[in-house]
Length: 222
Image 1 (tube, one colour):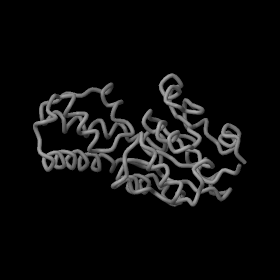
Image 2 (tube, one colour):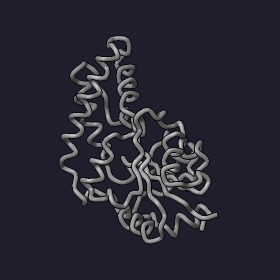
Image 3 (cartoon, rainbow, N blue to C red):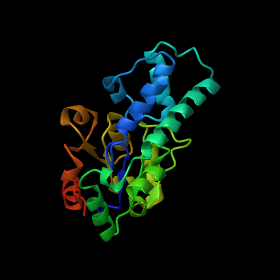
Image 4 (cartoon, rainbow, N blue to C red):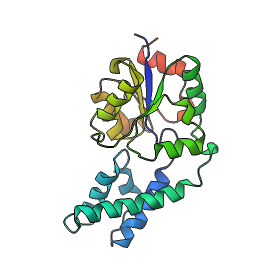
């Protein structure tokens, strides 16, 4: 079979915005009397904004304290702080090997699509000067979050690709599960003992190990 598209998560795959998410969530949580640490923050990777807020409120035993409107206000405050932190992003913050892989995909006419829960993906890609390398950016609004497969299926649809001929690249457990549920080849970025049990077909320790040739060989695609 021929590779028809490569679908990328954003945070932790294209660049490291996790540190900005953690700072913004930590500041929001502290204002309402909840302490979170970097270990807890790992459980928020790949999870959309309102789900992340719910996890924080449960963690602080405040899940019944706020109305839906108040929760949306808290989530918006977090996002405003996060967006302000993103102002420091530059092209040098792109992970090693990513721009080279995107160029290889472009040279071979293979669409690259962003499948991220982040509503700030366009802003981030503009800051990294990578937006032109992507065929599409899936709008996550109204799409069930990972580990549901919907966002990856939507990404394949926007690329005009058969899901079985797509490769998904993720750094989170929820993301790997979503790729597998979509019937795609799952490439993990991180640790084998963390991502392997959730269905990653292959795990690379770093994005600098990625190349189109490696992906084609691993997925047994042309």
